[in-house]
Length: 121
Image (cartoon, rainbow, N blue to C red; front, side, top):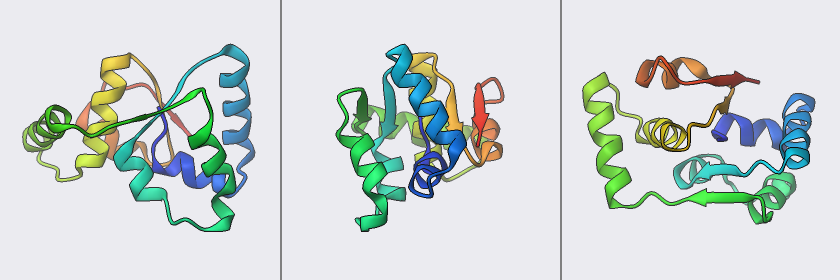
């Protein structure tokens, strides 16, 4: 599971993110980007060519923010006293898939779910 910080790090050619993505590819691990995360990070700049390639890759899934997930994200935010539904959607998607989250800002995610596995970049 990739959050916006991971996508922005990929855009900056961060070696840690690149290594992690290479390893995921080698292992055949699907990469998931929630739609809200993509919206948060996407600017359509030519500098985002690595992000565009990731989004188009067969091993990447863009997880939609449908009505059920939107409601669940709102409920989670309400229970935790936060308002960032994108972070909540990341947490919910990670929970559903039992997946770790690659992030540059673990605090907000862990506030929503302290048991979440995060890899900080």
